[in-house]
Image 1 (cartoon, rainbow, N blue to C red):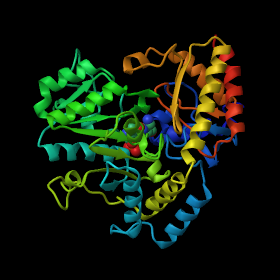
Image 2: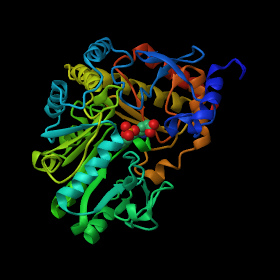
Image 3: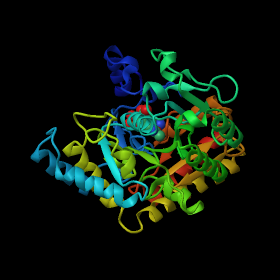
Image 4: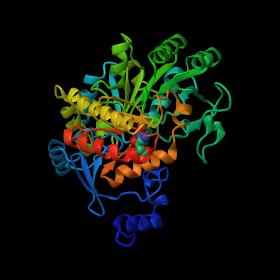
Length: 435
Ligand code: KE4
């Protein structure tokens, strides 16, 4: 296909005249891997077709929301019905209550929930709530974890251990991030040192329990246990950012995975998004009643949103959660995800490629590294050019993975065993070219 006949290139050229970078979210621009982003024309089940009509097996699924695949009939029907009843009211609806009931039903740590429109908004509001509930300002986040683009969370590690962070973005004043401590993920000693020094000022620790923004890095059990213990000991709140893992790695999210390893484990505040909206703009944050009742209009912590609990988005999210709650859903999903990961591992081994991978529920990650990295520094030792070749080799064979080595992958219930087999076969061919 020549650039002149490639509709993706033509659309990208048009888009770049009007939209910064030609995209409405930076990772979509393929800047980490080069090449032309695929403009999606339509999607169905496990696939999408780009502007040239080329089919891709979709392992991004809108970065996590499309756990049922694209265009699940029951979700489409629920959305179609909802739009005939009205797009938005700025007033309460029964369906918001039904969605809140569905979320609370599956997350024992969440007694109340507030619906918002994006993961960024949910994480930003959760931080404000933690600060309001504790009367403290300092927060801890971890290098490599992403919690959306609220100013206080766009922070990279300062030099040395447990120092206050520096903005990762222009336009974020140092004063805004002066209360944000950035630590190394899975570093127990650093966490203990930070609490020893700042414990009395700490409002919360916010963490991705399985860090999908480092591709796929689990918090170790000792590290997670220490996060919980130190927060409890110092009166800080443990905020689980489950925007990606919520209803994705298990019906009860990553907190259910950790509770199985650490009896009685629970975070204080949970941030949700992606799957709970089923692909529509919907996110949430929740926790115990005593904390959530600090929120306006009951309490002093202000938070609001014109489209919060939008009736069409809640229809999409509710239909999605009702489907994933069906018995056996996650067992069947995990069977496919682990079959993909094991297939990729064996294909890489056959080609003699350093390859490490992990998965939980419908989420997976892999690294062109000999072993699974435990923190951001280790992840970034990956061979970026080699990843770019792998990405484009798969793309040319109709397999669409994340265009960045620090992003996770997602399997939906619509992916068939044949799709998994075709993906592994494509990877087997590409791995041979990476030697
Ligand atoms: P949104 O504001 O993009 O809805 O959610 C922010 C967010 C918060 N927390 C976690 C753990 C997240 O992964 C995200 C957003 N994830 C990225 C993908 N890594 C969305 C893709 C994008 O930025 O375009």
